[in-house]
Amino acid sequence: MYLLFLDESETPNDDVFALGGFAVRADDWHVLRERWDDCLATAGWPAEKELKWSGTANGDVPPSVAEAAYECLPTLDIECLVTVLYPKISGHEEFFGSDEDTYSTALMFIAERYQRFLDHHDSYGVIVLDSRMREADDRLRRFFTRMQREGTPFTELERIVDGLLFGPSHFSLGLQLADLVVGCTRAATFRFGDNTRWYRGLEPVFARHPSTGRVEGVGLKVFPDSRSKESKLFDPGGSG
Image (tube, rainbow, N blue to C red; front, side):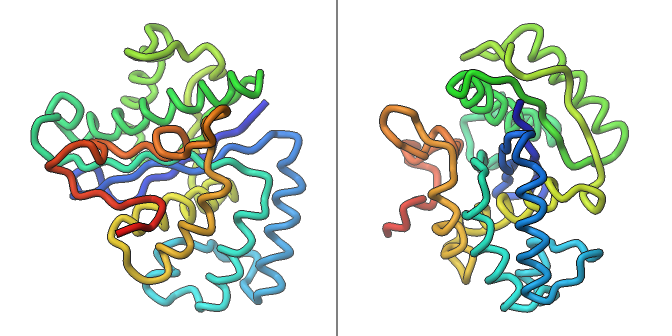
């Protein structure tokens, strides 16, 4: 059984919106927690204080702590899944008609890749999301339940157990780590500061195609993708 923790970066009406996080085997959870707690204790970060990606960007998190966190993340037994969307690029209005449509599109892309991930590992899993407002959570539950029942245009979701689970990030280590993953991945879009370097450090633990080892389209879904002449996308490999 796997747990997929997801958080969003920015809002669906932004120029660039991202949803993502990481999958971890339930049996490995206690090891992950112990290693992460040891990392933060060694770095001098209070155990009771939430470590957020935004804090690494605005200086609330000391650079030494941020460095320690992003050095630790790729050593954990996790696989990352992130989708980066460009909602304001024309020609894709059916995916981005409203803020909820944009969020639902991101979740659909993630769920499809999680299903393939679970199929490859011959396992089942659940999805844990950072809670927003109650009404928004309920709408997303209904959308996901319908998607489970009917499938997506590309796959059935039979390996994802039950509906979505929601929780506040300050009570969930998994959601806090998902925030670090998705925050730096979206920020790497703009090729600024440490985020690009942190993303490159995380790239080895992004989910990959089992045959080709490719990350793009598997662990990282960018839409509209680089084949769209209108899109202004970053190269996950760091070229350009």
